[in-house]
Image (tube, rainbow, N blue to C red; front, side, top):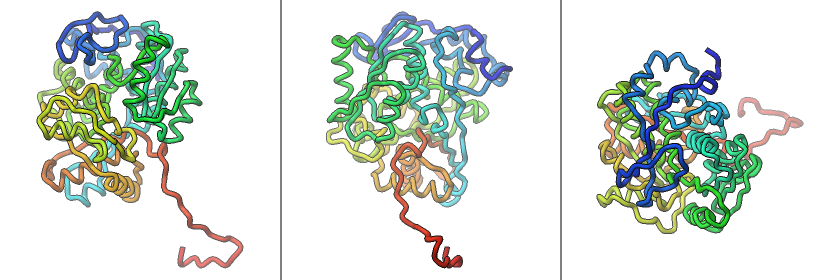
Length: 413
């Protein structure tokens, strides 16, 4: 087995069509699409019976451990269109000290910070850009809170596609810099991510770019669904009892829910599903409000604010899909405040040596809250998502110094 087999060997492909997530209307595969005629996200559909015949667990086990091992369940048909930066399978780590301290069940974290560009946005964007390349798209634009723009910039440059990115003016400095450095044109905008999204939408006609916003193109969800494929395989074709997912646009939550259904259809998983928990920040919690109101859609959250910039999404186009996955799974939506996020980040770093990003820390804060209020039982296996490396975010300053020219009291060090 060569290390790049998944990127060089042609495999059979099984995409049959795309489907409106709201109406079920069918659209042809292998053509450029944004939203459906109903203005809703399009989902990629596969001949799953065919996938089941073509792919075995044994065949899968023999392949290199990267995202592209699941080619039969992905939309890119030819290897020449794959635009890869080495999307490794991300490890699942047990937080044993924290679990023991809290008196809960097994506590796992999937560390998405190990991916190219340091975040799970690489999964969605590698798929979107590979499909853009396959479909002849030459210019892509997107709004971002940082990490998605960085992934788009990197993959678009690799593919020879122009990228234009718009981010809120307070986007972390490292994100804006890496977007620009990786070849995209990036603009700071005096607004939030959905304000940036309006600029992308309006510029489609005038600038001629392709709108690569969350769920406005069909393929990011297929990339994000590999989180579900991977974790099921890593857990021996089983799923955790509970998955806590930091929810902004919610592509990964929707994608994992789709992945589990597809894995069951091809005979790799049984009926068991994790309870899907959408984690939001108290300062931007449209899904929590809609979930608690029993609503299907989540109106825009005004004056959204949180230190976890990745989940500062006032309105999500896939709101009904997020809420559907949460409800069908018997899960819930929960908000945690910034103080709890900061405390969770510090605790995980200090106790476990694990540097969560703020959005990942939000899932740990939510786990603690849900364990305390009984929504997560003490015998349940829970899996958190750390969506990016904590090194991308501002870290607290340290002021302690030592003067080597003066006597040193080693007993006090």
